[in-house]
Image (cartoon, rainbow, N blue to C red):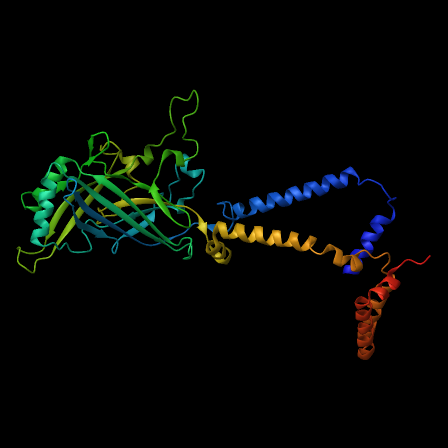
Length: 415
């Protein structure tokens, strides 16, 4: 192979007079190739991790769970009271949000397929019993009744996908949470439920502007990336929803204005004796962002089957890498992939220009005819079964390459 390259280089230089400049087209193509190589070095790792990569697939849901925790923060220096209220998911169900015969809205259809939107539903009754000592209940009641304290319900979601495979850079688990500040009216109702004065407390959210609404948290959540980040869907996530110059109305986003409103009830299965089990019932329905009931045509998609009136959520699953290639890329990550590219190409460039003077005696040969003939004799001896002659000729070839003087004599041009 090296002799073939030497012969090609010699023929390419044979017709060029001494001192002739390199043609411009040759310089142009060499520069273009080097520039293309640089672009590949910069962009190939990004293309590998792009959602347009064929290794990206839509994951499926494996399991999910939802938790609700009531927290009351007392004035500075007085501490905090925390009580776990609700856990569900062991008896939950999920189904495509778009249904079998329904198409996605225009704003979603541009970047998503129906399989990416999954509606998960839970029953209203918690899967775990609520156990709190009397002092803990009294502390919770006092904290909720204290006007100086702030109270909130932390809704936490945990969704397990089947992809991507676990790695140091991510995995199939997605977790998200929504902290809902409770209004004074709602806190008073929760205290009444704890004291047995009322059966149900309506959870009302107090937003940053001081407004009170029944809408607790949005119903559409994005689950993005191999290292999953879960957050509510925003208008900026949908193409074509930006307000354009001269445009008076935004696209129809009524379907995305789905929020959850919930009522909290403390249930018991006995008469209050020591063996009585207690659990919380969180019964939810869909409303818009202002807390008003949504129209039937909008609520139709977000409706859970009977018996699943608990917290619900529409998960928008981003594509993730799957298969052997996806598992390998997920394991290394984009930084690792860049390191391999940079190191590999840098090492190749370094080897191509290292010790160039040591290769002059074997690459810049005036003629390769005799050495090629010797290699052909070795091949003919092997083909004819003359193995002893083959070894002798191969030893002669090694002797030529070991002795610079013999190499010089066999590769110089005859006058």
